[in-house]
View 1: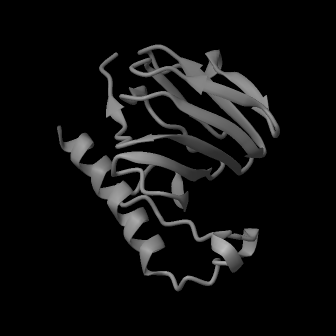
View 2: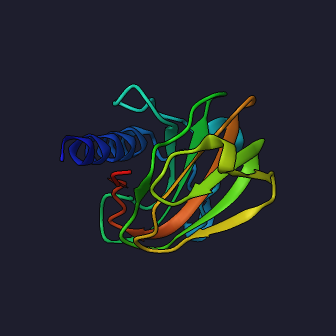
Length: 151
């Protein structure tokens, strides 16, 4: 339960940091532009796991969202799941994805930049970086908590 609360707190912090930014990304006629240098990653309040940047929407609320997760070398999530499908594209580096309730980094699949993975709703998984920084873009419908699973 504490981990779930921390996860919600982390997502709320990301949303708050993004909302506090000036609307420098708005273009004419409702278009929105975000250049790489304009994307701000927020540290994970748990002190572990990836940093997050909200690209669109709010993952803590109902509706469509796009976030990016940045994993420093050696940072991997532990087995968890999400209540809705998540659509993940690797933007930078090689992302290591594992499925199931048992955390075993040696049984992960390397996905290089440009790769895609679907996380089915309720399916346990874990993922992260091994020897290089990794950035993934995640799209889905909120709210999008990370729910830890027991091994």
